[in-house]
Length: 384
Image (cartoon, rainbow, N blue to C red; front, top):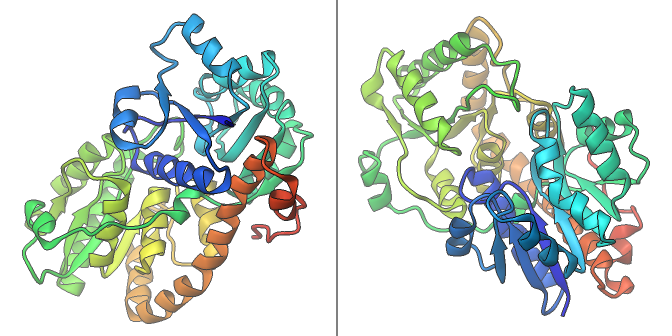
């Protein structure tokens, strides 16, 4: 039996990360018959309840003497996916990688996102860890560029986010009613995130005001209600801060409750438009064929838009909502065209996402003939 470990930001903290884990487990089981999957999660109990892993451990609460034997029995340790290598957190997420490399266990970067990475020690740690990898895949071209900039010599392949392979589950009218949405209501979804080390450039007061103006514009212009979709727990308070600044707060709702990534993907089919900051909110929107307006706060969002060929976006650092409102009007008029574009581009990105598990399988004992075409680097790259 081949035993593969997955280490990342798992455990119910972020719906995007949970989507990545769900997809990665499914892809690995398809690629490596009989694989045993061990997940190293921040909340082991949550991961056990929500994912079909064979074993789950929490390195943040377990003793080193408990973690080391688990890592040593692996045939391969996967780092990621998701955006986990950034300032203040990179060295934390590399801890299992460092242990595996010390004991000669092959390590593989699984469609990771990287940056911002400005701290000298964090850059050194990432450079060292990546240069000892058996293989590296990243989900956006900017991550590859950053790795090359900090001195990583191992070849880096750009694939795509594993969440692109997720399958939706129904989000029913009854579930909408629980969120306060009446039947027949025209809906626009919105996503907002907090400031932090992963988004250091946000101007806190301005972007709350900008999004409040935008939400009011949606209500008055399109006779729609706005549903804020929290992808992370901190997003709840951010959404309420925006609603508090709206002129029409009665037309705004916040999705509460414990929903799976597959259910949130199903929810996207109820929206006329999706306006958001969170990367996986935008990925879910694209998968559902829902026209999207992005508010990029990081290069990973801009890179995803480039890969889609979508140019509907507005900077959250802009001091005036006028440009965003004009862009929304253009998108509203061109909704059918963007739906067609999404139907054309998503299959290509999904094919790139499938390459990640094939490449990982090659290092976990998969027969070379099954993965050689992916490992050769002949597949499509992500271009600006």
